[in-house]
Image 1 (tube, helix red, strand yellow):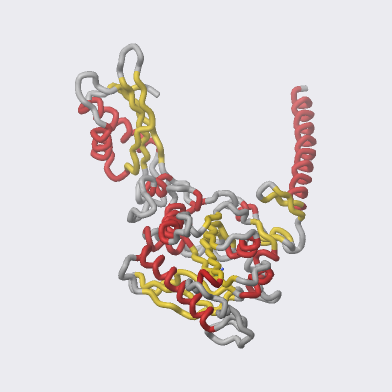
Image 2: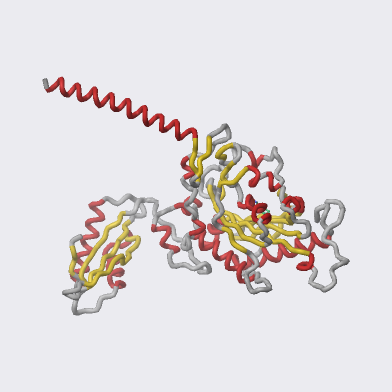
Length: 436
Ligand code: PHE
């Protein structure tokens, strides 16, 4: 009898399981038909190749986190531009756009920048397409036309960019770029009163130095302004006597184009791409009386050099062993990253009443923890303080993060050290442990 009932129960649960699985399956199919990115739904098509893993990076916005190395570096560059380029009204010349959606159209990412239809950078094997008309931006230059069309003459854009790539210590399919552009009108270039006889444009030939529609003077002016601006930035980042060199380059949206390299620890490091903006792009924005330059910098590679971060994957780490090293930094402080262990952290809290009669400083406890725990102590922080209204006693709660450089610590090992710390704190500092 019991057996029968068990059997019925089993078959019922089996039926339920089948039904449930079928339901799950239909959800899965549904998920396959549309994708949700930044709150918008897109219909999958033959171009879709974005993966859930990649999409999980959208919205992390590392560049907006003030104490993240990428946020620090971004602010360092932004502050440099704010302080160096002030307009007649006393306001910074460059406006910053750091919250533009990483979902862009094929038109924004490629067409608007005159990137040919058969250009390799458009390949499905190189980009993350959401559908045939949208992709996760492959460069922040994708916003150039929309910003200029909206009437902005000088801007900095910062954001996450996505390119299909292998993953190793220096390549990751998501990274961050800072792009900039600056436009000039004739009287910004020629400061004298009478500029009526001067022309920014001519109907000439394209040469290595200039576009066909620019006069040589216009092209040389823009090139000199661009190079001076970027050399100043490089010296701000790498020091006054940084060794830098210009290398000619090619981009479909600038001419002439250059790359700036910096000598760093004996190697030439490619810092950025830049050039004189193609006049055709400005014409497409409805601008006929201005000329300009643009550049784009990758932030990770730069941050890796500045903070000595050995692996690009660390930027995505949520591990406090990584993040806390930048917690107290300002955009200009020289932080040198210290390698953390690859083994997992183990966190344990300790609360105690402070001694009544003797002075107590958290630093006494920090020293004691390191003394007792040695190298397995990664961090100690005071996370809570409480004053008892009646007894007038103060209680502190500390979070201790344990981690071994060569192995995974077991809970028992951690507990043993934690208990030792507790009894030594009781004995030497006169605290009274609280049971949590
Ligand atoms: N978008 C280019 C890149 O990703 C950099 C660049 C920006 C070059 C603007 C010229 C002008 O490499």
